[in-house]
Image (cartoon, rainbow, N blue to C red; front, top):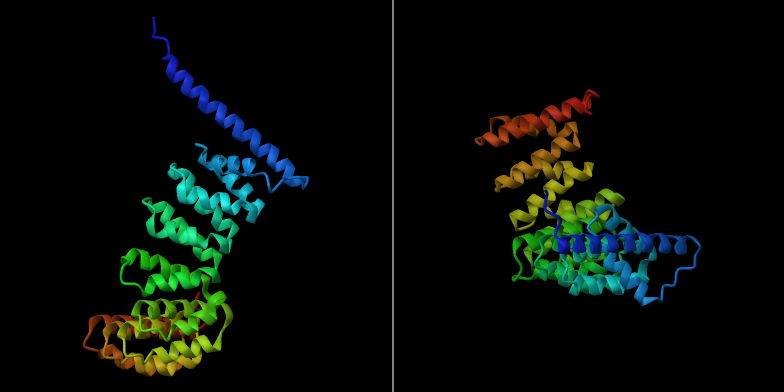
Amino acid sequence: MSQSPNSEAWTVDEAVQRIQDENDALLQRVDEQITLDTFNTTDSSLLERLVEGLGDPRGLVRLRFAETLGEIGEAATPFLVNALANHPNVVVRRAAAKTLTIIASPAAVPALLHAFLNDEDIVVKGSSAGALARTGEASVPALLDILASTEYPEDIKGHAAWALAFIGSEAADQLYKALDTASLDVRCAVIGALGHVAQEQSDDRACRLLVSALTDSESLIRTEAAAALGQVNYLPAVPHLILATRDSDLDVRKAAINSLGKIGDRSALESLQTLLNDEHDVVRVLSKLAIDQIERRSDGNDW
């Protein structure tokens, strides 16, 4: 005779099922209220229950709660911020950060910044960085402060630089001003972000700043600028990139050669042909690839 199930286990299972049933009913009720435009955005108890729903064990249900809270918008922000900062369940904190990405409220920036820098969970950190990026211009001063600081590790700075690049043209004016800073990390991140600005808006000022950065005293800045110009396809940069192929720093030369290949202007061919005899193997290989790219584009066969 088989042993009967442990009564406590059945009680736990029943409790989980009851919570899931309640969550399903809550979602259905709130969806109907939103559809009928009768949802009460001042009902703090209801908003707290919706945020708790982000801890549902079913991934698709968590997504529905996030989408519902996202549709509610600003009224849900304080409750999501509180959950991000204080909820003991890491699943809820993760989902709160992802939901704040949907809402993109500037009011959430301080809490997102704190979670990005201090939460013990790597997913919460990454999701908070994503939400900062999605929030846009309001996040830029904090991101620049992180990059300028000496107390944060490279992974944090890497996320901050990515967020800044994602924001791109929305923060163009702040990026232009930040180029005057003494911080190398800030200037590198700004150069990368300006590449996105130039791509998004065909911004001539951003392109000219990238060209100017090819003669910066820091080789890392020159490398970033050379790489960014290849993404922009800015033809006036070609003569400057040709000069950069003779830079004293090998990384700058490599980036310039790659960008000349991407831009595809035939005026670079003669200089690239010369580099086929360079002392560095990598320069010879990259030059050959760049020449092939330009010639394929000239033949109309570059996909």
